[in-house]
Length: 129
Length: 304
Image (cartoon, each protein chain N blue to C red):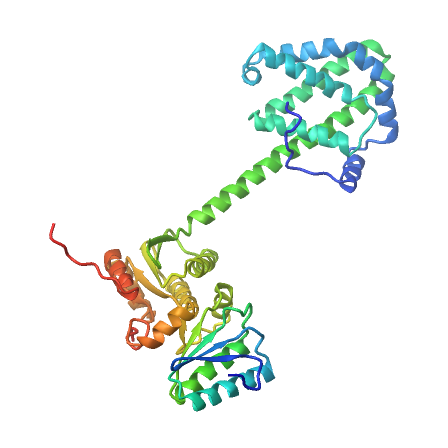
């Protein structure tokens, strides 16, 4: 399932899997968002996994694009999980004060799928208030 | 004195030149020293014998020369060293040789004062011999050249001692750093981070980075942070803990804070710190139970 952008979006059952492996700068980010939303509309997917284990750096712009995409997908009925953020990326984002609140996360795609399957677990709606 | 002894120091040509200039060792000095080679040869045995008589007379230096064979061996090397003074060459190889000598003495644990005392003795012995051999003005000039080179050698020896101490210090610091962030795997995908001692910003930073890397390496789902050993939890420490939690969440792991004493609980609330973003438990056992439930396990009672 290939859109206009360079980021492939695969369908696995009722879930979409997008693997981000290139820098998400302006046009790529926009195309990525568009592709994801069109794919959700077309497939009626109820889950979206965004794998960013290939990204060595994530600046505040990219972090915002990722968070926004998740929020948009949520509006269209697809729960979104961000997977595989690298430790150094996480440390940098926290240092910049960008904790990406409200975005669901997972260690890897496996865990991401598990979170989507059982969103009532400790990581899901059952999180402490 | 083993030839293979590694010296922790390296001196390049530029460094050698500036050091030579500082000790004011010019070509004239080196020529003079070369011209003294015959003098050195003549008095070699005498000076070395006197040198070791002194060293073996004194208890603090004697302990480094266990038996007769080792004394014979170091005497031979000492002769090499002594004749090296009259080689008339001061190049990188000379320096390397001298550094090796210093490193060897440091390695056998000889205190610097004993080493320097031996250099002073060397100079005294040489002064006497030069006085006997040459008329006073010439002996003085010869002695000045010898003195320059011996002090140059001493500076190298001191540097090897310092370099070795600095290296040891660095190793210890690394060990302390490592010890201050132990990360234990208590179950599949569950890590325990028992924090002990005061947490300052630098340590907090390092804890965060260590934990993140460990979590990614082991693909851990939960990290239990036990703060029972942290004496004071103030706003800053709480902030560090919250940041670590937030970073762990970003890479997809949960954190549980345990070991919260009544005193710490009171402080946190009185300071108005909101740590509701973290799971908190008073006892480590409860934290482990919660961690296990997150990875889908449960501790159950079995009939004994």
